[in-house]
Amino acid sequence: MKSMYLNKTISLFFFFMLMINMAFSQEEGDTITREVHLQRSSILVSDLEKSLQVYRDILGFEVAVIAEADSESYAYSVFNIPKKAKIKVATLNSKDQKRIINLKEVTGVKLPKPPSEPYMSAVLIRVDTIEIIMGKIKDLGLKHTEQHTVKGSRISYKEQSFIDPDGHLVAVYQLL
Image (tube, rainbow, N blue to C red; front, side):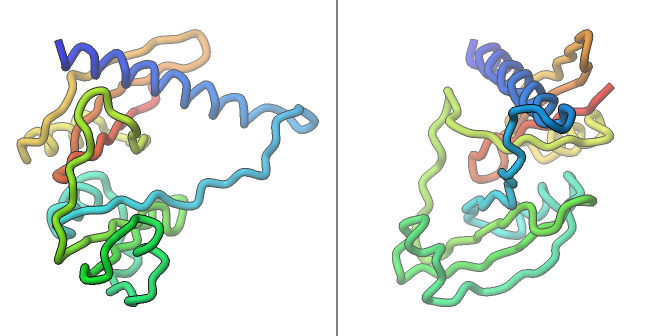
């Protein structure tokens, strides 16, 4: 039952995200504002190496830099992290965008797990080979949904999601 709920939630999420993407790719002169630019997502993790196994080794992001955060880093106040904690940041690039994801390893304090279903947010990632990627995710033993295919008049895609090692929902899709 929970898996079916998760599949339906992810399908609706993909549908709306793809429709928004199509809307923003309309012709010049449309009334849609094009000034918004999402630079990156920051994800708190408890074990950077485990997370890199997923985001770098499986999903294909490239590590641009790994560095210790300064004790005065804005991340402490933004994420409400106690000053006694240490933060190490891995900044990841995709093929077509620099610094798209920050994985922030927090040590010295226990990180809470994100809430379970219904999930409050997801990282949505377009991939070229969903079967290969999800095969590797399954090999790691991560919780995942079944693959779902959407064939529409404007767009068709395969979608699937999984929960990363720290409990974050990650949805992947492949355009058909």
